[in-house]
Length: 330
Image (tube, rainbow, N blue to C red; front, side, top):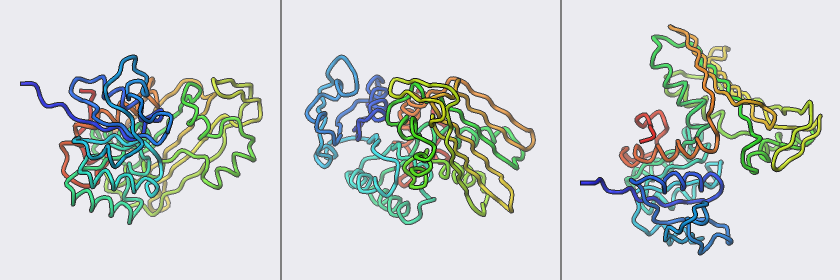
């Protein structure tokens, strides 16, 4: 007998939410039963056309989240924002509707760094018997779950270092804008000071690695600086002249006894060249892993979709990628 299909509601159909929905809709073991988006231009349209399919799926997109959440579903794929306090009302409404959640909210990837809001979500999820997971490619996998997994072949680890270089030239417009593409250096610094430009999630990744390895950190630090063009750079959305910003370089540090025991180095820009992910583990034995070919948007959709079965089967409450079984494409 064929196993029962997992019923999915798509909550947020921007570039990432639509990407996750495409992966889910293409898999035999899943069915999309509802779709929510606040964009009036999408309201009433078939979700198939909204996410880029050439055929209808028989599910209209609605701006009425409360109505859609009344549908019978096993999980909601949530992709609307990066800041946990801002999406908390959405998460609470989904939880009260008794749906599990896989969210791409970056701060939800290690929610315990956000104190009271995490406790509220965890308590609510346990009350209504559902599981809530924040994940994605980064945070969620490349700079936290992957190095954690690699420590499994070590007897001892004293330092974790990760370097991620992302070619943003082929990525979506919101991401290119988020990293400051086309700004002057002064404009970048002003926006970065207001946290209007930054990759969200480095602090969460540092905290997740430390929590999983049972390392007590004295503090977590982040730094940010612009990447500046030395030659002209052109993307689908921007033309960047020399001296203008092409992206961001951020560092996240986990400090213990005055030493950086966790170092995360993220370079994301439209002139980065080939994307690469590297992990170094200082310990016994020492490990150096190099991965080519990870695509931020495609892989974010993959990680979220591949986490669904694990989340549906997990015990109620807040979970991180370190709390659920290893995910896979099947």
